[in-house]
Length: 159
Image 1 (spheres, one colour):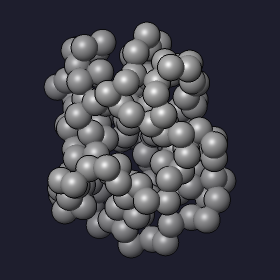
Image 2 (spheres, one colour; image 1 turned 180 degrees about the horizontal axis):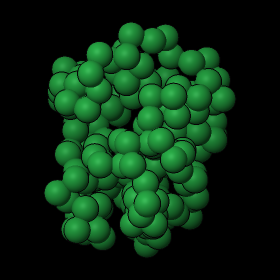
Image 3 (cartoon, helix red, strand yellow; image 1 turned 90 degrees about the horizontal axis):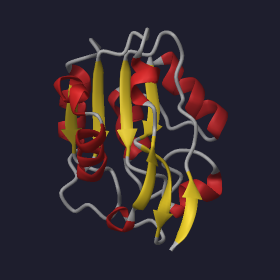
């Protein structure tokens, strides 16, 4: 296993929702931005909720998130990992979620899948009251449901 590094958070002072993944996939690490695998359903699902096209580049995706008051980060900053397999994450360094949340407008956290949720629960149990576990948008998840994501987003955003 090799050690890999994740990305800094996307957020600003207006962010009110934090979406947390576990750790970037190999394709995301190559593209140097979140959910870089075109087969991952994240961008299709979140942009679809707002009735928007998926931005074609990183700058557009970052602008979309900030305009929609969404912060995006991963629970793990760096780790030993085999390929993109969440199950192989080990010797992890976790993100400083309390610092990101301190003084922010973030009132809800969505975990993109079980691994992100279990990591958050293990390292930051005090954040569980703000947190909802949603089905992973990974192409490897056969139980993905855009409807579940849209329902959760609809509880935050009045469209």
